[in-house]
Image (cartoon, rainbow, N blue to C red; front, side):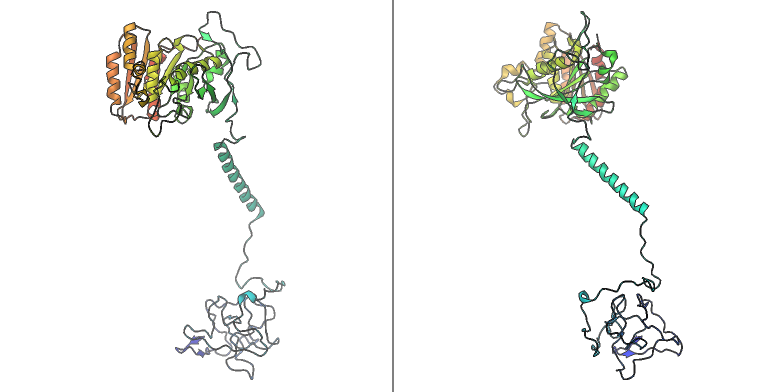
Amino acid sequence: MSYEPDGQYQPPYRPEGQYPQQPPNGQQQGRQQGQPQYSPQGRPPQGPPQGQPPYGRPGYGQPQQGGPQQGRPPQGQSPYGQSPYGQDQYGQDQYGQPGAFDSPTRRQPDYERPDYQQPYEQPRHQQQPPPPYDGSGPPYGHGEEPPRRKSKAKRWIIAGVSVLALAGIAAGAMSYFEIPPFTDKGKAVSFGDTPGGDKGGPAAKPAPNSKMSMPTGPKTEFKNASTLSDGTQIGVATITGKKSGFTGKVWVWAPKEYNDPKYAKSGFPVMIALPGGAGYPINYWMGTDLKLQSSISQWYSEGKGKPFILAMPVLNPQPDEPKAIYWDGSDIPGQPKMGTWLTDDVPDLMRENFRTIKSRDGWAFMGSSTGGFSSLKAVLKYPEKFKAAICSGPDIVPDSPLWTGHEKEKAENNPELLAKQLIDKKGPDVYLAFQVGDNESNKKTLPDVQKFVATYTKGPIHTSLRVIPGGQHNAKTYVPNMGLGPMEFISKVMEGPVE
């Protein structure tokens, strides 16, 4: 059809016996059975029935796609003003666009038939649902394919994959939040034989002149904190020190050799590992990301180190923030006795629960930053108990603000003064391995350590110093470099495993 500028309808030119040309979007879909579309002569009916207005209702009698046929003329009679372009009963085509009497600028007046009771613009929510498909024709429009249904096998595969993905996410979350049965965290940990024999038999008895010491008890209940890839476990317990009175957590780890029947009568060396920073409520060596535990095993297999048992206690009684208050691993008057906690209570815990070495040849410290200071001070103050220390990026002198008013006690915990006293007493020998990065946050750290080494490496004090190129003030710098000199330096003078 065509439009004149004024919007009036102009009938299309239709040569006799020819179909009108179908417009691109004019296909008629969902035609009901028996509905006339074209005359038997192969052409659409021409015009309205006799006596009807020449401009009858456009498309009247042509139902909306798939909808009810309301006011339909008797069968065999041409619809009034039916458009060959598939318009519905509202003057709209099958795509909802304005029909032949709707121009962009002018709308034609509505016409009503006497036998048509509904208003021309029937609200769509009042339209009747389409009749059910009776099987007499294609259920879909011409050339339109029905939607494909996924096969049952494909749907089951998709459902199975979705369930597995959700299960994996749930298991990961439950493991992260330590929810059984997806983690062994929190379960009891047994470190070999203890007094009475945990494994069903009597504990191994050392020879009368043995260098090892069997666990003395009482047994401490350790709970699993982490499991390493080699199957070894890190246990944790909260204890109250018998000598310090302080209550805090201690994490412990034993290398796989400890549970090897080959070493059932052997005592193992112990290293007390101290963190930097607050060191409360955790000791960062207890985690597995820094790989201290796995490195101990690797260094031993390479012949660079001893198979140390690790004791990892909290360093301070509370966080040091926001006032940067710390305790220097010492017994500061009026404060929790953190020096006694580290040098008496923690070693006693290890003797109670592990096969250890009787002499100081099996006892060492290691630490970084303030933990390095505490390690250095502990060995110099108690050389009869501890033989060696690895001190990474340490402070050299005590500097806690809690020492104010306690100058005498502060001097008793000063590594420089303790080193001088040990030299004056001519022993016993101690071995101090220092490592410092050349990019430490505190630019005084390296010069202070170099000065200490130059001044006090004499007599019973033996030292080594590794300067780490590009090394920063953090544990990730210190752990790999421990295996490049410091660990081997102290392991040469340590004992274990021994019977």
